Length: 137
Image 1 (spheres, helix red, strand yellow):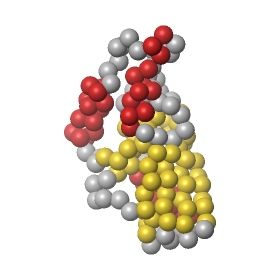
Image 2 (cartoon, helix red, strand yellow):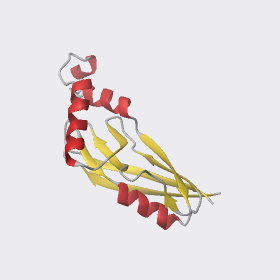
Image 3 (cartoon, rainbow, N blue to C red):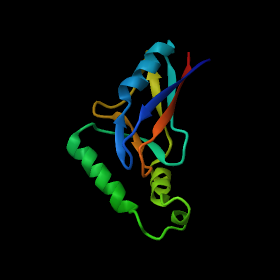
Image 4 (cartoon, rainbow, N blue to C red):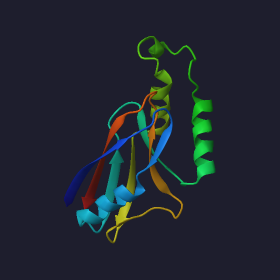
């Protein structure tokens, strides 16, 4: 089995910023030379997440509203006494830091409208690192 890892870097605009990384992940898969296996997309850190969602403006705005409603700011979270970003950590834990996709015939398998997004959940703009690891034959 072969394993190829690559790090992607991106800058975000702060709280609930959505960055489409589909093209970058597909490029890593193509460049890996792996024909059949899987690809892991992982964000190190406690206030970022990776999700799949259709890249449609209205839906992305709906997603942001949903996250803000599910876990709102300023709810007297205990962690807020330290960094004032408890809601960021809670949102990230709900969404999750990673996704795994199949790789078949050298291509990442995803649905027609299923794009891959990094979600910035911290309260300020950040420089983020995303690890893409392709494994297989």
